Structure formats: structure tokens, C-alpha cells
Length: 201
Image (tube, rainbow, N blue to C red):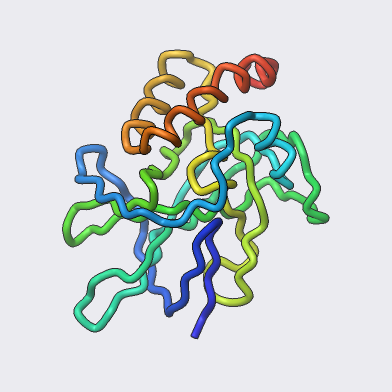
């Protein structure tokens, strides 16, 4: 049986994949996973993230493990991410121009639903993001060699140059967070935009 590891969540099973395409008007179904830590400051998130990159998602594929009745046991999306800038790299890996990101949500085409862990929404294609990442520790299966977003929902921020578009992307996702996560995430956004303002251009 394949072992697949998400940040704060340990899952096991056999994976099946479908090409990811998430219509914005699909129903979002949120399940609660165990978040290993609430990050209350950007400094804390930076220190505990071995890899920080800026770039754009270019494609993605939803992965499901289903029981005998076809109900998903777990799910995620493997997204191709084009790296524009590497802010930090303590991974001992050479970071290529394209890396794979494990996102804790997946589009269920049969029911037109986006299944989400802890309110996480996948990145939109061709939009700019800054990601705080760690290595995925899976030893086999499709997620080998990928990167997890730190803290499930904490390590992803929209980073479009246009402020209104940046705000739209953030607001769209944050509406699915619980109160504690929302407060922590909000407190980091202004600090992040000021600290990394040179990369917004």
C-alpha cells in the first residue's frame, strides 16, 4: 500500500488521477484535517519553511483514493508550478524552473464539487503566488518529489502585481477558513507585501 504524506495529515492508499479543472461556481465541500501548527507571524512561517518561491501554476491533476462504493477516502491535486524567483532554499535540492506542488484540494467532476482540506482552494492557473514549502516525504506514489505547502493553508499567498486581483484571489480562498486560521492569515498579508514588495513588479 502506498504511503502518502501531507503536512499535518498522514494518509495511505492507492491513487487514481483526473485532469484538474475547477469551475468557480462549483460547490466547495470542506473536511477538517489535522493542522500541525497555527502560524501567527510571517517570521515564524519563514523560519520553518525550507523553500520559499514565487511563480505561477501552469497545470494540475486531481488525485483520489476511493472506497468500493466510489467515495473518496482522500484526495489532493498535484500542480505544476513555474518558478520565477527562489527566495530561500534550504532543501539541498537544485530548484528547477518547474516544480510539483501538492495542494490539499481536488475537483470531483462527477458531482461538480471541489473537495477541500481545511478550506484550502487550489491556485488558479497563470496567477502569481508566493509559496512557503517543505519537502513531501512520500516514498512512493505520484507525490514523490513534490512539495507541500507549509501548514496546509498558511504557506500560500496570492502575489499578483495588480492589487485588486491579488485581493480577489485572497478573498476567494479565505472565506472557507475557520476563524483562527483567518485571523492568523490576515495578520501576515500586509507584512508579506511590504517585505517582498520588490517582487510584486
